[in-house]
Image 1 (cartoon, rainbow over the protein chains, first blue to last red):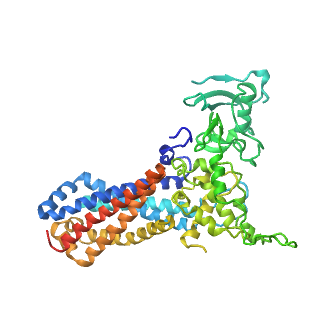
Image 2: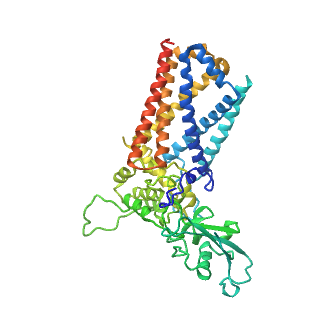
Length: 143
Length: 255
Length: 114
């Protein structure tokens, strides 16, 4: 934190509490985005093992087809689904869709942009991610 | 280091029938000679109508008059008394003690604003950002003709921007914004909302120049619709709505 | 490049990648998860030209989207002319590097040069 500017710093950016579900969604979007990027780089690297033929590929499968590997993949599935569904919601919001219409404000000044449409979108993203994770775990551990 | 002080019975301005009191923790910091802030605690009585600003002024009156705090209208019109109250940016005059549901009230200077002293912060960055987006009507006509009348607007045209004109420049939105927490160059929700206020005004012809100003790497694109600005705005400006509507112009959703 | 153009690309790559990644994941599920990951099965996928093209597209789209996202996160964390240029060009280089590395895998495998 820069003391001169009194910025909250990463702690402020990373703290998802205090401001409602929309702030939580922002935080999860960041986390899932960075997590997915890390997985993507690792995935490109690990799948390049195919160039080492059957031996290389089997080694890779041995390393990844473990309980830990499946657990990581399940988390990746959850991150992917959340990032996608919430991403669509955010993109629509960025275009001004579903953020409400300007109107003369009256006390108690409820913000039209923090409406049920976007809240439902966020909760849907979380629920769908959970279902996708459960399905993924069922497929991976069910075999 | 904290000191706990109680008000002397004969000095309080609050009737003694009030048996309720809270502990007010005030952040004290003078950048000129302090390395870091400390909290000083004061026990202050309150009634159901007592605001945080009232308690701070009680402290100034009876305990420590050196507490630096900015305030003016005491009715959420001027935007002077913005501060962090129990971790959230609020106007001290507009926040009742009773609504906080806590026996301990912590007040700190607003985040993302440089501190002058204690609870008073500098607003230069907010004013600079606001000035950057050209907060005035831009017209094509260079001279007004002698028989020119006022620029007429229908009530519907006024409704397009009036809520954003309610902005009192309190800075709570900039304090709550997660991007402002780390990005020193970000324009901020206050300036972006004001940019929309003028773009949406039917009298204004400066849309293209304003869109050009905010279309930069630390402009409108660093807003991620976290909505914290709208959560804390005390005047119903809803900056998040303004910013997304403004972005709609850049993305082609609106023309 | 203007920031609005970069962000339009960011959104466009996201939408396009969603559809293609869905196909990629469905391929693992329709065959049976474990069977679809066997060497011969994966090799057959790479040798099937439309699928190889789809993988290449996913690689390009997600590299652009992912590294632009990283660029945005890093730019918000710290500011300064030199730092910002380093982040922008660094992310661009990483993007190109990953695309090149992944493309090598796809092309070499598709052409049967293993």
